[in-house]
Length: 75
Image 1: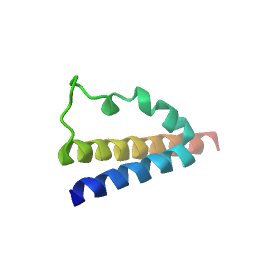
Image 2: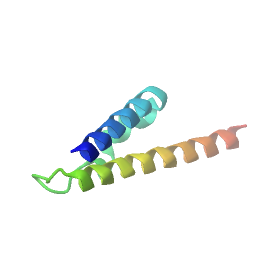
Image 3: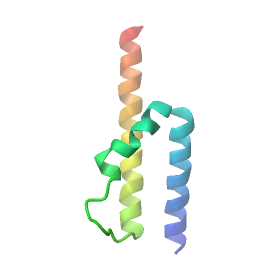
């Protein structure tokens, strides 16, 4: 249970960070395929939540890299 609580806390903190610091990305999270379960009634467990957290981190990393590269081109 501790692991599940830790993962949920990380997801909440990361989502809050994205909402506050990357609002353009936050608006698109609902549209990202990685955030949509591919099952009608998914089994939510530590692995599923860990995979979701990893996906959010990858989305943010990609967004930052792309956004930073675009800003460099504009300079």
